[in-house]
Image 1 (cartoon, rainbow, N blue to C red):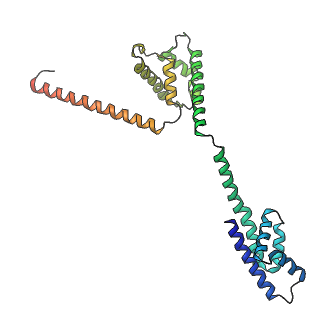
Image 2 (cartoon, helix red, strand yellow; image 1 turned 30 degrees about the vertical axis):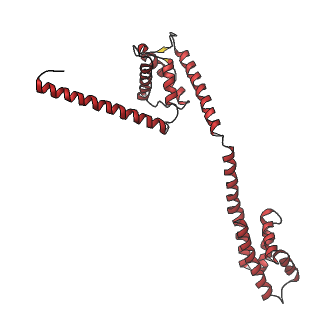
Image 3 (spheres, rainbow, N blue to C red; image 1 turned 120 degrees about the vertical axis):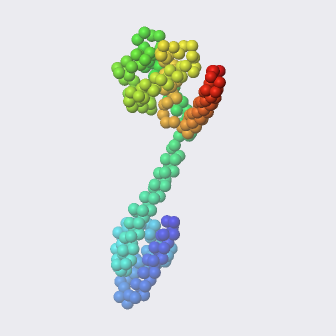
Length: 253
């Protein structure tokens, strides 16, 4: 593209200079004629001269002074050529190279995954140490009262916000602890008593809610919701049947 544009400008300048020399052959200054022929005597020489203007062979002002001798139209085209290449073309070419360099500098997906796993391990260890420092009785279990105390005085929201878990209000804080209770009830129902949860349950919930939800996680949640909805519909159906039997025969099953 750059070569084609340069070639088109070279044709225009050579044609203009040819007409100028033909119309002013009797009054044309010999020094100017020699310089014009040296710079724009042929299309090949014109292309080389134009390349010199934007590659540093000579200043574009010298080209303008020469074209100004030919006429205002040629001088205006010379200024347009210099501005077009210095502002438009080189910025476009430079942006393309910068984009390629940035793409090359991007880490490999395996490196991103390894860094994410390493960061998760660091966050897990930091959160474990955080709860160890706030566990006054040292039983590694957090009661609802302990949880509220940690929220009010321990800086829990700021600690989690630095690790991509944003607890914006009291409802989010309560939901986080409720998720930990549910997590513990599923994993070890025998120990899920009294409303207290071990710190491991809190950390498992932390790792699950950390960051943004992926499409897979959303689909899994929707699947679980549909399964629960189907179970509820079945239970409601059984309750209706039982109610019909009760109304019809006057006894319960």
